[in-house]
Image (cartoon, rainbow, N blue to C red; front, top):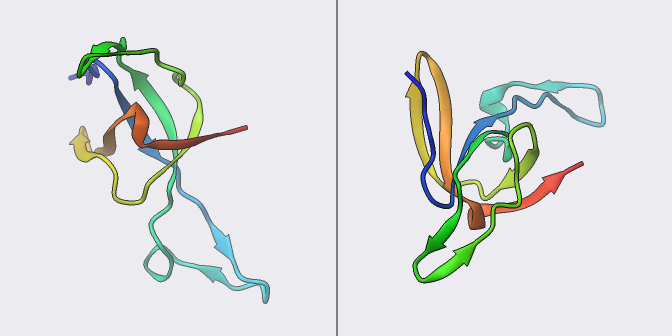
Length: 94
């Protein structure tokens, strides 16, 4: 199966981040907040959304920062993705 986003939707895959404290302790996934950095997997075509023209500014492969609670989680072939609107993306990480 393949996910294809519509309109101004973007499919993201969350990036695992390993966090180390100043003392050198590595925090496990349960000891830290959910990462908000994700990789763009697929981008919708944009177009007219809610009466406004939307131009997609992100592209597959971009690393982005999203709001922690944005989007809808979808699991496909044991991989978790998040589907968000482009305006839920806060920044592109370069």
